[in-house]
Image (cartoon, rainbow, N blue to C red; front, side):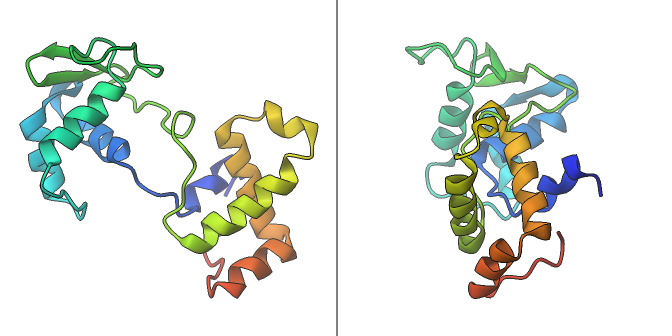
Length: 164
């Protein structure tokens, strides 16, 4: 596996945005209605809760270039509102780079702790500030593969490195 692909084996937490974009990528022309997105997400293992429609709408509007109810412009434009409760994925047929616009979070507590430890030390290197989030995750994955201290921290949480 190439170094630039290493981050893909990290247990990054899937967000609502990840799941919503995935639905758009499967729709014709990258266009979807809110109710179709909710229906598609109901078929996944995501906990939809009682406010699924409003959660999906709010998530899309946070990244929409022309959401009617948004007071500010989206910092990262991913969607365009094309009708009532109907949106288009701007990057279709390609996925947007969600790594760069979302907070780095892991689905496993141990990885989140080891990431925090790694970042605290990596910040001391001036080059760290110039790296993209993807490059930072690649560095983390690379160091997990070679750094015994990081490996021992994961082992302390009973987590192995089988995939890295």
